[in-house]
Image 1 (cartoon, helix red, strand yellow):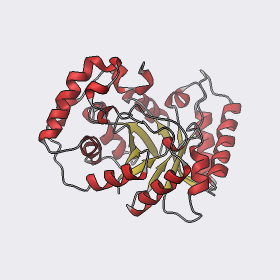
Image 2 (cartoon, rainbow, N blue to C red):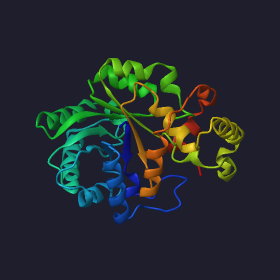
Image 3 (cartoon, helix red, strand yellow):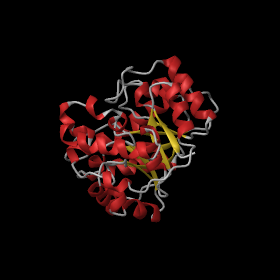
Length: 292
């Protein structure tokens, strides 16, 4: 199954449509059970996701079929040092300990600009060492845009990449970037299918920050209604339909949400005409730039 489970809600109060706050341990256990029953394989977490890794360590059984992917800390330096590389290694071992795993599937640099900084290769070399030790199967990076992807591919041979694609943000589809990555044998994980809940929220309920796109979103809502699609079906189905995508990471707040999502995406859908809803405004497409 191409749908993967994002676990940021296990550690943080995350998403503009999240009215329930951080997910409880009891609910997280139910979510993992639903994920396993529906054949979901990818579990996405990060050292920066509050207590998410600790929660997974409490709840994952010794034997499980999930491919766990975590991420590095943020280094925020113009120049990477040996000390930063040691921090990456130490944090990775802490992640393994928290999650009670002997090894994991993937390790991503959380912020692509860390790899693109001066001496960023020190981070990547440390990741390759962890891979050579059999502690991680695939190494890569989380990116926001095509410029970062071009910079990474020019310097590194990565196995795995996480990037944003959704109905509003189709930039990497239009440029053929996903096809380029796939031709190089890179596994593609997509995040932000719901754009942090923006695509699931009624346009009139959004903050004034999104005023300039409310009419656009209303048109999108009318379009998918005519297609007999729910907001969840439309948003997730659009990304799942992209042949180059290996996994779509989706976060939920409770097990009922995940059960409903798994049921909805099983229905056949058509995505003709969705290209008309693509935007280019970085201040809308990148949640890090939102001023709410």
